[in-house]
Length: 382
Image 1 (cartoon, rainbow, N blue to C red):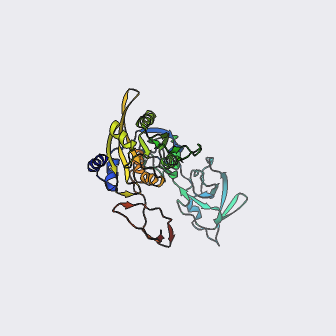
Image 2 (image 1 turned 90 degrees about the horizontal axis):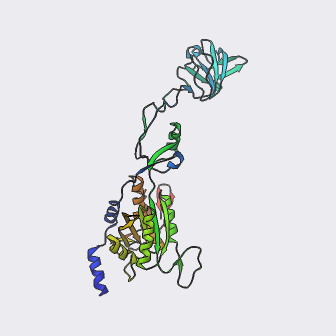
Image 3 (image 1 turned 45 degrees about the vertical axis):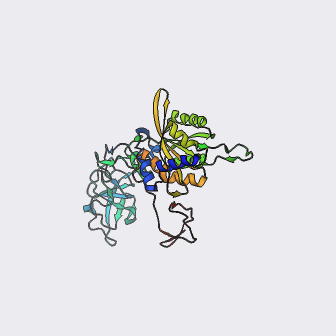
């Protein structure tokens, strides 16, 4: 009878711990191949190449302040009561090169970022001087190297600046721009096909008939895919029939999906089409996890011939409840997507908090509970 069938299934596919289930999921994923993308499109992506500098940064010694470029020896005796007077021979703005060298007794008025004139070895900032016509009085000494950024001070030519596996943030994009990199090699974004199952579902813009509900799971899952760096492929809704589900899955494979996410059809009812399709068209690795919500969670592979080639794609079959779907995604789909992106740190940050309400555990499953987290000093409350 049907009860005997489920008993055999439970024996073949025991309920796994979250850690064991996640380990089995992650064995199916590797970093994807690299691709060249414009530098601004690398944000959040993982570098697939080492980046070396072909230049010094800054490329030349320049002024770190608005002030006067001079010879330090000329300012040794300068003080508030004993100013030293130098003749200003040139005004130099950033982006221009001095036409005259600084010699003893002279100074060049210089703006921040302007290349240091020949002969100068120090820059005194404006606030420590007073100019009258072509003469400037120095009221403080200015030692050698004062307010100067030397060539290569930030980056030396030939240095490895960024390594393979670096996740790109805005500061890395700034460095890539400084190195003149218009395009960069990063790990390709995973394509994640998203499919909701159920005769009761209608799309978001369709009227709700008797017994119908809107397909929210596909949209929340798509947003999660985008949040973690993937490209969603929206496959819509499959009815509770194997041929419809198989057709939609083939559609996702034909569009190059690296992972297929389904919601619904994985519990212990008579119409568990996702598990049936996995058994018929591929294989099931597991379908129960010791967690709440999300206990009925199927993982396996689908194999199909697409354009004359056999393609095998991992499938994560999640429950139908919207909360269960989002929690299951965070625990299992998120690490899979990050792994395909080349990310190695898969752990979410955690804090210890004081529960302000009672939570009862009905069984030995791990509970993922939605809370509002607040912080007072070093203490978190949930």
